[in-house]
Length: 107
Image (cartoon, rainbow, N blue to C red):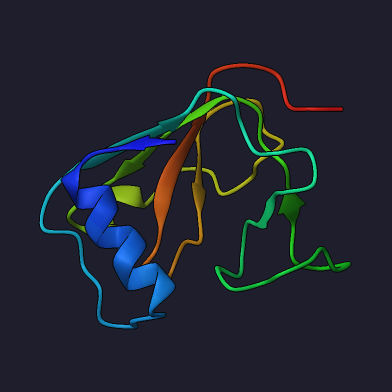
């Protein structure tokens, strides 16, 4: 994973589970190798540790992640990771961001 300063601040807030995190500007990160095969995350719950029937677990292939300074900028964007394009992950939480797949998901 490669991340700019805003994503590093995001990571610190996420690891501490701070509910008051707000990006101070746009942020950019990428994972060109994608999630590890045993990895993945819930698209709904930032702190889920394993897949469940209703937490929309996704193991993403190569992708770019974008933070926006105002959550209103995410309105109208899909939250569906299976729609075939960019989607919002963790919408409605301080950790919401755009996921932009750049290649296929692992099988």
